[in-house]
Image (cartoon, rainbow, N blue to C red; front, side):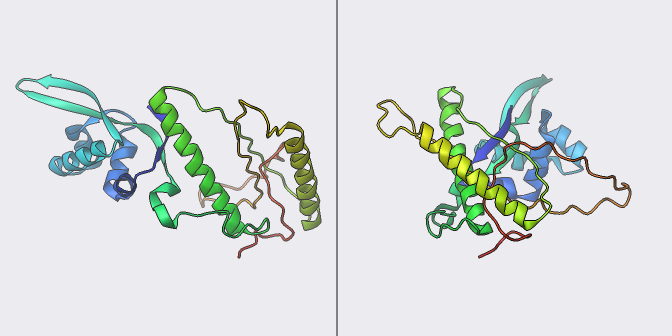
Length: 225
């Protein structure tokens, strides 16, 4: 089972978004038959069996094993991944395109960059899975707490300069066997999560400062176009 799988086909995306099928996918992190799932989720077996066949048709679940019980063969399924990401490719002509209106201070442009990243990395993963190869990639995720908007702007400026210097140092347009890579850098506020009534709030542990995906900004809240 994969940790994350990318859904690129519109029909598969539609199938995964059906509430009942989403419940079945979540339950099939552990293998189960239609009868087992029906009992676990409190659903009619016939309905479960129908949705399992649809999920299998779209490659979201797979046959794990078949068990003989007298004259009956029980089919045991499992999800093809522990979690799924729907690629913007499933939206075809209406998927975001960062080249339409590039703006470093736009949260919507940042979202378009993220969408393209999902689409391109998803495509690489799909091709690599067919070829039984790994995808060469690198990612950094970090939290940074700024004392002021001025500090955030200064951080973004320094990071922009550092990235530009690294790109200039390592980019080789004439390399005969070189491969193009895309570098995406973004910075956004972390959405506030209301504490659970049953969970007392505790002071946050100061995060370790590390290189983070970031984008320039000059106001406390993300800019929107």
